[in-house]
Length: 88
Image 1 (cartoon, rainbow, N blue to C red):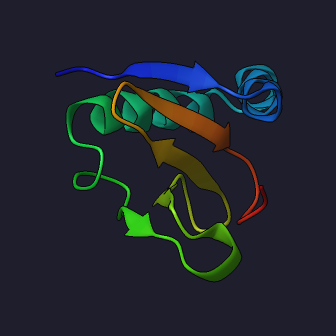
Image 2: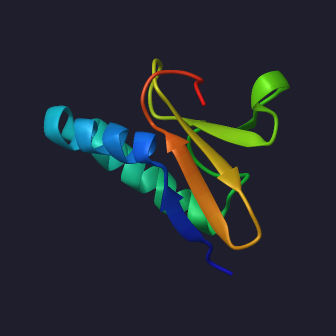
């Protein structure tokens, strides 16, 4: 089953930033999101279940500095941000 992708306002702003300033990161994010739809907890970008204050969320590496943070539900995948490290 393919889950629907939902972008928070913050994540949509992050994605727009990358589209404007760094197409390589923008394309990497699009690739990660496609992979997340297919295999939410495995795949590219070193998927990692987050702990402590961010428990219940997952992250994938965009690059050394930036992470894509998301949550998996039964029907959708919610993208929280895709710029910087862990913030919610």
